[in-house]
Image (cartoon, rainbow, N blue to C red; front, side, top):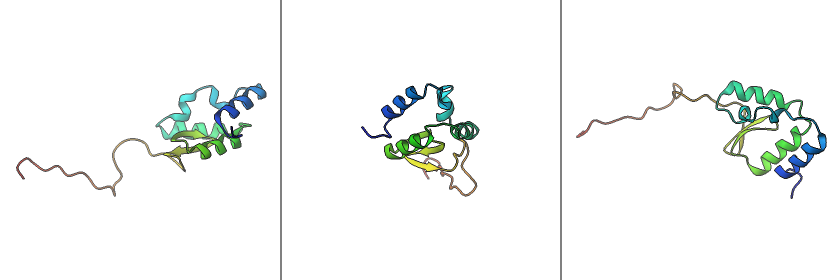
Length: 101
């Protein structure tokens, strides 16, 4: 077991005997809404386990969520997450051909 494993973080949390920011509303840390993710990142700033959480997430290449105050997407830290919806102006549209064309 490495010091950055999830089990190690749980043990450290129990030893602190204080609630962590992510224990109140876990959905906030895995939201699709950029505002929620920004709020989660801000909440991580005061967490005593922030650095260990971040190191573990990097080590595990977390697929999504806010870990240690950073947003992860497909195992990579990203600065912000774009909301769902229409593609940006520079994106190519999928063309649909009529039948028989």
